[in-house]
Image 1 (cartoon, rainbow, N blue to C red):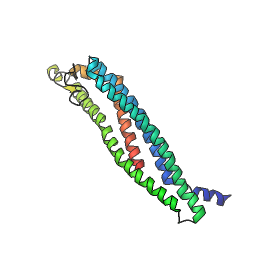
Image 2 (tube, one colour):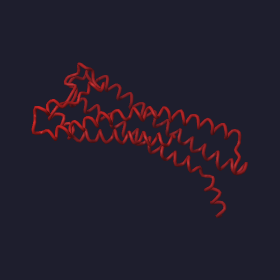
Image 3 (cartoon, rainbow, N blue to C red):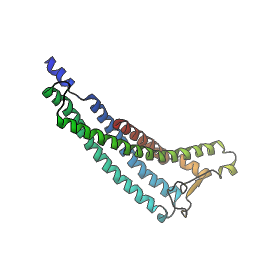
Amino acid sequence: CYDCCMRCLGGVPYCSLVATLLCFSGIALFCGCGHQALTETERLIETYFARNLQDYITLAYIIQYFQYVIYGLASFFFLYCIVLLAEGFYTTSVAKQSFGEFRSTMCGRCLSSSFIVMTYVLAVLWLLVFAFSALPVYFFYNMDATCHTIDVLTETPASINQLCVDARQYGLLPWNAVPGKACGITLSTVCKTREYRMTYDLYIAAFAGAGITLLALV
């Protein structure tokens, strides 16, 4: 019984298992938090930065498109991780039992090579996703820093009104959008809302999830 258990444990692809768990957790964090963050972003833009529906209708369509992309990513990586884990078991336990400790079948070699190439291609592509997921974090970081400056300069209202966050500069709204920006006390009020804090935290979590997924692929 002991020998049987040790043989089973020796056939477990621990590296593939850890990578699969990291990939699952990273994708779940990225997709779940990213989807909700996009919804909250649309609500913030609609409430504080745009008064006319036509000003943010394009952004709403883009957000909806990215949410569908998130659905596809979640499904694809779920299936890919399952297949990758199964391939890890195949190239370890089955090959060891049939051909000894240091040998593998030709089919196993081809299968392993294919998955290695595919995984590195996905890692390169996901590196772009990782970089892209940093953009909303950068936007909200700048917004949070501006709000902190406003809180420090509360005794000089003239200086406060000159501190603004313009969503049009980041490409979120067209240049003819009204008001398109939030300044002074209005911006400080936005930063103190629950929606803003939650959206900021969700983007940070999605960014962390993208990093965990990249680590799993590498």
